[in-house]
Length: 496
Image (cartoon, rainbow, N blue to C red; front, side, top):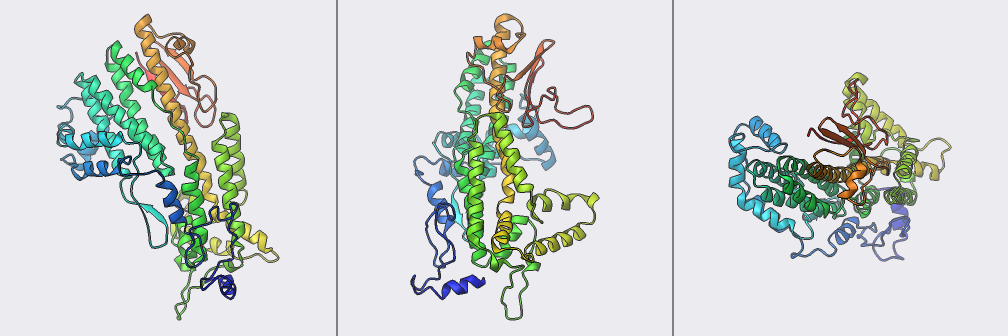
């Protein structure tokens, strides 16, 4: 254990028999005042569980019904590569039973299961059971992957229904997908929100296919159904449930003597070689972590999470982008060695940068050096530097935020596309400008990445409408530039 634990233990008599860690309980440090574990650290798993399950009941949680559906689930039969290929194609365009007989058979076999999923989607929540692991970290039971499977299967069935002229049934399946997506978006957990956004994107492919294949009344029906949908937005409380509590709990784990697992988790590398075990079995922590004032680490975690929450609350697109730029710049001002972005998302996977084992060895050495207190470095400065390990991965929140905004852009673009199709059927051609769509949508939605009108280009008998995307620049509405650089625009295109 750390040296300061022994010092605090000497004072334990004033607080009973339990040792009290040298941390200050408060909103800017621990954020919550309990529950407190016997060793004096905060039980963040219990705190998370209490907040996440607040208001959850057997009546409003659809998970039991959803789990019952997958207890009945039947996989498509056939060679894996063929089934996978057919599964992908079946969600992208209308198809008939003869096109993909394996998928058609799977849909028939899962009729009861899909009916249960529809029932589960009508509940106000869909919370997967959570449990606490041996390190006192809150983890969820498996199940998010099944939500994706359910959405893709419903999309495949809807495409089949469109091909068979059963537009009403297709709209019912799409409505189920939208409900599943919004159930996840309403849960204060980042990964659930990301799954929700992906599920919703699956539905919009079907909406466009149904409108293109249908009569004018079908387009109007798709439009009416889509107009009532709640927009996708990142839940700021997810920052508390995930990034904040996870980071604060990592500090508690280090204080309990689990620095090895925490650093391995933060870097996505196996750093156990740095945590040598002597012949007596005593764990020797690397560097000078026993000199860290963990209150400084806790304050930095909260301050940076507060910044993220403030950015998420910024409605102005330009100001939001500028705030993210400033936030990332501060994080990258002093990168921590062995961080996730280098270990798994960057250099170690780049063969051009040399041998993997050599890179890993160097990265381990860099981490070991970073954990040592510099000559003449104050305790406050050293503590602030170590605290950066617990906040550096917050830079990924910008990508998550952009993903959520992308979901809103896709929803708005598809609404405009449906409106344009209604005008085409009414007037015999697509309008020259988006302004005409006000006949159908009085208040035109704007591009959430620019706060300006979406870019509309009439082309031949069709059109293209697109968002500038996260970079805020008009890349011409192409998915890839002439020199094969992928753009970040979001595009909806109709040939006729």
